[in-house]
Image (cartoon, rainbow, N blue to C red; front, side, top):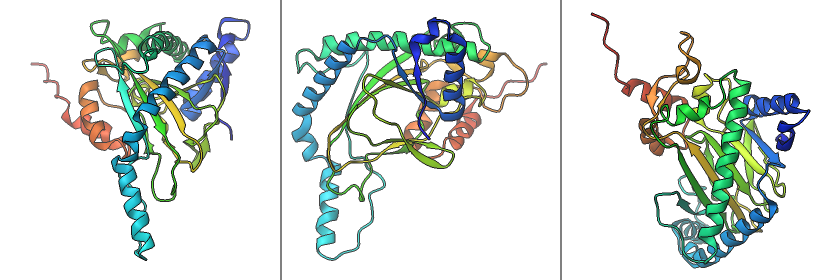
Length: 315
């Protein structure tokens, strides 16, 4: 099996119907697909690669003394002494930092801010086009998912970016790159390394490589898209395996609901009485998610359902 690769430029041409069907298949059957010819200039993507790699070089010394490295070194030392060791299950072999409009950004390298601002602007537009395709496939009015994410236009959807590197790992059998999880939010857009693999998605009980593809943007659907679609689209489990060779670069951006937005199938489809997911405020879901990220998503839905205020019966 191969993660679907979709030529997004065909959405505006004679093959629109077929392209929409491919996007629907990616959302329904995989929760993951790759977009090529997506409209983001390849020259800009090359600049993004460079500034992120340059940024990691400035952070590399810090990673070498980080908790994952020290923990792995301690395990290897214990193994050399003849002790029995078990793989680490609560750490990731990953160097990360987050950026969004309200936080302080790295000022070094000097081109980082300008390049990433330009990239995020292009990516935000792409995310909204992808959501409009989802609207159409779900039989919704254009802009419905975006409207739900903004609480009916009252709030700004959250758009954040996580810059990750997964350096070469001497013992990939003892630690994970990134533990298996589903993403909490809405639409995730990943610009992954085009040489070093490691990203896998769970499909029909099998872990499948998300194959490196130069210039592609990987799309995956988060938990909130699953809820809004009432389960027609699914958030997919995925993970990153550490590699002995190569420093994997990964730039993931998250187009999420505003914390104040109310999420439920009825938020986009109207009340039909057949909703299988609860109604809740996204910020409340995130409070649960940060504690249970690497656990099954179903208990998270149950937790926010239990916490949601009950409507009073009519007098």
